[in-house]
Image 1 (tube, protein in one colour):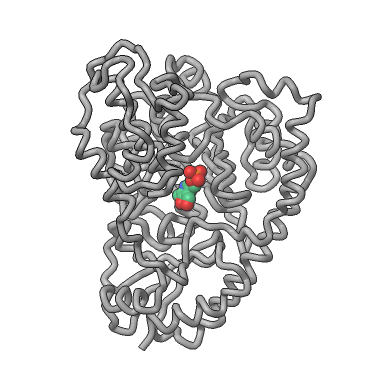
Image 2: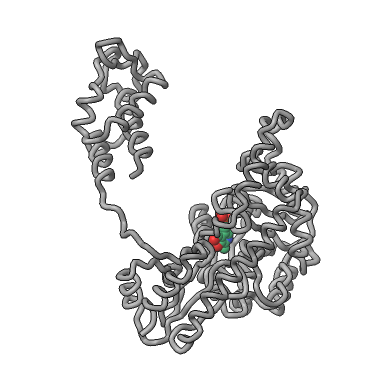
Amino acid sequence: MSKQTLYINLYESLKQQIIEGQYASHDKFPSKRVLGEHLSVSNTTIEHAYQLLLDEGFIYSKPRSGYFVSDIESLPVIYKNQSQHFSEINNTSVKKSDIKYKYAFNMSEIDSEYFPMQQFRKYARDVFEDNEIDLLQHRSSEGLWELRQQIAHYLFNSRGVSSHPDQIIIGSSTEQLINLVTDILKNASFIIEHPSYPPIKQVLDKKQINYIQVPVTQTGIDIDAFKHNNNNIAYVTPSHQFPTGYVMNLKKRTQLIHWAQLNDDRYIIEDDYDSEFRYSGKPLPALQSLDTKDKVIYISTFSKSLYPSCRVAYAVLPQKLLDQYHQLEHKEGNTVPVHMQKLVSNFMQSGSFERHLNKMRTVYNNKLSYILERLEPYHNQLQIEGTLTGMHFTLTVTNGLTLEECLAQAKDNLLKIVPLAQYNSDETAPKFIIGFGGIPQNELKAHTDILIQSLTK
Ligand SMILES: Cc1ncc(COP(=O)(O)O)c(C=O)c1O
């Protein structure tokens, strides 16, 4: 547990005792030294926790006498046993950390070395200038108009997606937008890919929305497997299926659109999360750009194209769903700070975003080419798939090593790799997801050496 979480937990626990009336008003509160010793936590942790209690008026201090409990109404709260809570604080603080991996092919990381931090800092400063004072106010729940305009423009030029800014909703994550879409589509039942992006299942499970899982083949989701089913919303990742990396071919794209067009209440959710980075061949058009009947809800994110912690994603709603969206009574809007939206909008408007993407495409392509070239001599043992787009591909070990053996060798080498089996896929041979985006250029060789060492005979 981080120091920060520890002092907050301690503060919460003490606050709870006060609220529950475990202390009478003006009771003496334990001294910081005594409590610190009792709980074996540092002075700093105690200091911070007490400061919060002081700031919020739960305790007060008297010079040379110590701390006392303020005069507040006690509120009966059912809360877990106090000693259990304190022992949790203690236990977590001493818990051994996980294995420290030295190498990792992490899927969710981007290359931070080449991120244009200086430029971004300038845009960040600009949005806090005096002439941007209006940004301090609430804006429309769909998001900042300028950003929605920039996104509409960008999507048209890069993905052939045509939309009016009115149709674009800004959200803080793909998951949050999927959640919103499930609010808009009343009585929906889903078709999702198998294996699939975990948050989609989590949203559907949480909201008890019915879904079926349909296998993904090398050409995309198996449409024949659901075309006679009554479920009406298909969630797909056609540009780079997550996690297999397969790309849906054009025939399937048109078949899927045809399936959606056959019935009024059918829709496709197209999650186009990393299509910016296409390395060879012509990018296949987004489903949304092929559709003529307003059947595609397009979702994408800046998590790959900018950075994962920026938390800006967007959905393009079909025109005919806009009324349903506006009629929603409790929609979660305004989930991205306005300054962040403005910053991204300015970054896009200036052309910096496009330049950044062009540069990063080369950076990622070079990394990918390097790894693939190094793996090539082992093609009898390692089968590679899903390298056309994005920042991960899959690697199947075909030399007879079992999944357990591969993982054990990787662990011995302090290498973290994620098996596709983690996503409940059905492969017989061990298969791994190899994310390469975040590995610094100068560590690429060592990472690749270790990968080969761990998975080959
Ligand atoms: C299928 C898919 N969609 C979306 C995302 C990104 O989601 P977010 O916008 O929450 O960062 C990812 C990230 O890996 C993904 O794999």
